[in-house]
Image (cartoon, rainbow, N blue to C red):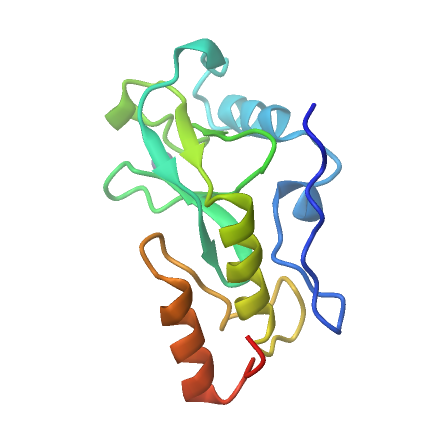
Length: 155
Ligand SMILES: [Zn+2]
């Protein structure tokens, strides 16, 4: 086990949600496995033969992993401690039914991204349509967006 990351919060106590924030009742891989079976995909494949890498991104205040199967459009809230993904809706046939590795930004970059997004108003952590980050978007991009909307000037 690695040291738990100090989470970034704003004045309202909001944070950018991960699996454990949103679905704390069930560990990430158990969550995937349960939906895999429920969706008729059978037992979830072994984790020891991961293929490919998908970047985590932020959509509406949540770290998510998007399914890579064209037309599936499924997504799951990402788990910072379980950096893997297989789609529980379609079984990731485009990856030959293998788990992917999930890539997160380095901790310091992640912290800055979250700070900039948490400066944006939201109804609640889970209702945060203005808090989005795509891989490749720089901190300067996020700062410029914040400036455009007059939030987060201190960042
Ligand atoms: Zn899928």
